[in-house]
Length: 193
Image 1 (cartoon, one colour):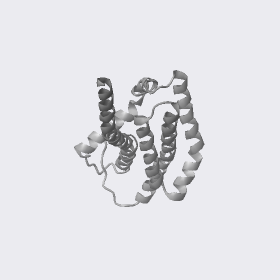
Image 2 (tube, rainbow, N blue to C red; image 1 turned 90 degrees about the vertical axis):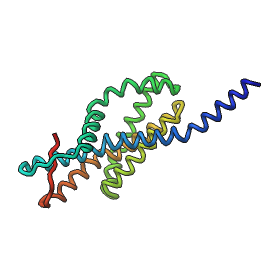
Image 3 (cartoon, helix red, strand yellow; image 1 turned 60 degrees about the vertical axis):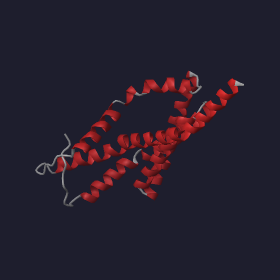
Image 4 (cartoon, rainbow, N blue to C red; image 1 turned 135 degrees about the vertical axis):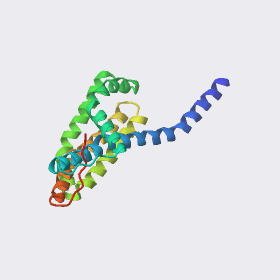
């Protein structure tokens, strides 16, 4: 009887913690997406503007410098995160061969979606493509929080791959479009250290 009560309590606690875990996971994914994708775009814009107008120097605010530094750390040292992926996926019930197959699924979806995502960005707009890509990436990362087994993890990996494909190229095209729109405009220049 006591074991049944403990099991019921365990299920109740697990159920109560599911929503906060999903919210925390989603917030983490959004933060990582901003730090990894959005901030580098703006840092690139600041660097280009500083290079085009060296006579106008203005320092970036401290919070902006911190954000750029965090982004550089995340995007520059992503290879440190890779050794965590295999144990994480093994803990989720995958064998090593399934982990490799899962990565092949990701690469295949990115390859298949690269041209259609470019077309979508051209037709519906680069900002919209980046927004949709960020949503797919958030759903994919959120799926990793709750997924167990190959099928569920494959679904999360497919969502993540679609998101990466949607952002890939659209971010640089948006940067180019922004640079073209700013050509000849009066611009305040920030120097990035």
